[in-house]
Image (cartoon, rainbow, N blue to C red; front, top):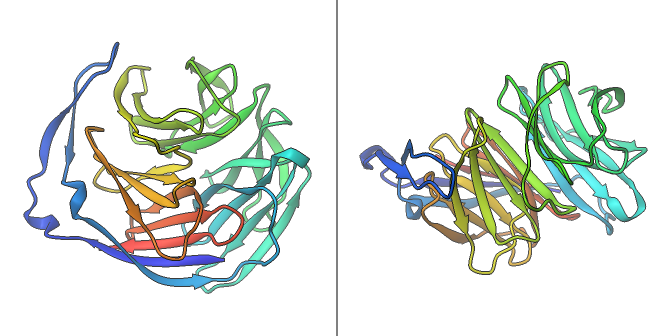
Length: 292
């Protein structure tokens, strides 16, 4: 099922867009990014759309939106190495396709979907209409999350860290990271890469040259999927507590935001054109939120 939420950023036009210094951790360098007070971010429930009942195993681990506002989700049952891709059109029409291997991450690039298959060790090219994998984009790694900034593609994988790929699937750059759990998520927005590891209480932001921009340490939350809005806020799914974490653009602070109708958020994406936060809720109810 899908849920639509409406919200707003109060007095955003009167906020001071400060060029806050993003504190460098370790090897990183200082960077200027405008931000606003995360307390001004408010979310309100709008509606729910039914996809399919009866999903009891696995979870939605990947979600993205197509230019026509169709939402596509990857449902992953890693234990049994199976899953499905689901499509929800703006008029509520839904469709799905069974995957031969468990899908994990998903992103839209060059008029097609790129879907990571961890156990198969590849990223597949998927037709947006039939949701069928028709070719291999990249292979050789246990790819988890996958994302694009519209020009290049990044993925996070076990034992390799973060890999940068060209539009042809060629891996041209890699940055190792200390730990990559079976559930690691990544988001690529402009020149910044954001990533999480379910087993680690942190959210990290890295530049495209491999420098850590900031590290946001969490108190007790375990982060899943993440995305950014047009102001640079980072939204992170906190499945264990059932909340959405809202992180300041400079990584200096965060807060938990309770949302209605969602029990276990697992993956997120953001429609900047319509200010919509789209939230996947494990195996029950993928959701959409909006703030203006």
